[in-house]
Image (tube, rainbow, N blue to C red):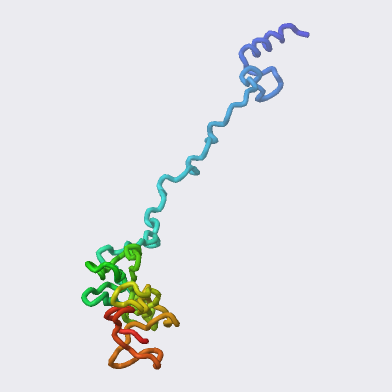
Length: 215
């Protein structure tokens, strides 16, 4: 081998001309073998990110017209009573009581105050006290019992001097019909309208003084 030929090749290798390599385009010194990313291929496409120019459409808010509407009662309007009108109970010769809110109490042995209106039936529970809740059938109707009779139930015998031996009432109240021990109260002496047409309507002196009754 010619040693003088090797020298130019050695110089050619040092100068990286590749003239003696015999392989075109093979850069033995310049190519380190490391693959770098291609800067020409961008990373995440910014055009695919959320479009800030399209905010939530505020032109279609929640329809408030579908919300439930609460109606508050008008407290300025007074309650209207529904039912039959009140009526008066004749309580002795001078006193009258509300048929819906009161009871006539006949204190048979109390000469100072024989009749009074009470709102509590317990105030008419003394010995020989007689609670009277009606004096005519109209009182029964105003208590919600239209068509009922006002009946005096006897049983207080001889409790007062002037009525000794007479059947004096123990209670006067509305019933669907007066029984055998009852006296129909509130009849008309003029019309003689007792439910039992065999009876006579009279003014009571002892059973229920001052009231009209059938006997």
